[in-house]
Image (tube, rainbow, N blue to C red; front, side, top):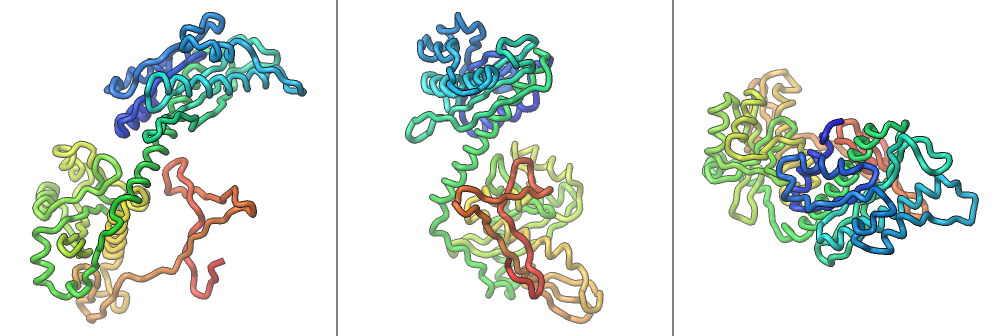
Length: 406
């Protein structure tokens, strides 16, 4: 049995990036969650420690010496209906992990607490239980109010009673559940920050400057550049755009053999000019190596996936630049005569070098809608193959000529 897994690598990395901490209370995993966290480099910055309460009768000192928490563990729930002994036992573990995760998060002063309790096998106490299961709960402390509440909970059932295999399976499930909580929390914080920033910015597309090559040339030297590579944008260590200056873009081209197509995007608040810089040709690895040497964490990522996590201003710049660069890549030849085209008007217009026909990015009508239940409590979401796992969105699509929105 491995001491750690990829799931714990992702969890520790997410905690470090979010600057959050956690504690752990284990039972049937026997300390594997804690050792899996500690096996990851840098875990001391995010892991405060924890406990393993295995012998239920002797576990009170390990449960904050709290008589109520201990009673939850040793005194099974009672039921006046036809609930089976197995179902009652599982439900008691669900309730216990909720309480112990909440209390440990409060007492340890961490941002999160992970608690698990269940049965790994190979033998089981309740009648009807012959395979392993675990109840997992993740508690979170609100950064503003200090209030602690359960944000994630799950019951994982194993198809067998192999103790060691179940311990690994249950530990990894706990890591994934905690990772989901950390990532959702980070996304919420980003969205909250967005609502408080860029609220009064004015990004002027400055269309009058597009036909003035001299003005664009004078702006280019001191401008900020969003760097593109196909449908991807350059991000910093986290979900923010990484802007470069003119000399830095040229240095990348010189070092990698790539060429660059620049597009004038606009001017922010009447002073800062922004350009798109689409890197064409060259080698992906050599381009990434340039950033790895100087800035840890700088990377290219799909614009459509990352844009929703950006501030309103950066979202506008990223989508604007990516749309223009994709249009430029796909329209190298004239649709009328087949002659080669050239970019004019700051990269926002194509002109055929043979017949002189000019063309601009097309506008595709589309729609997006939230389909909800009649009571408003449910919403229909869909998962696209191009999206990361667990990312679901409302329904959207293009509208054909003459087609209604419905």
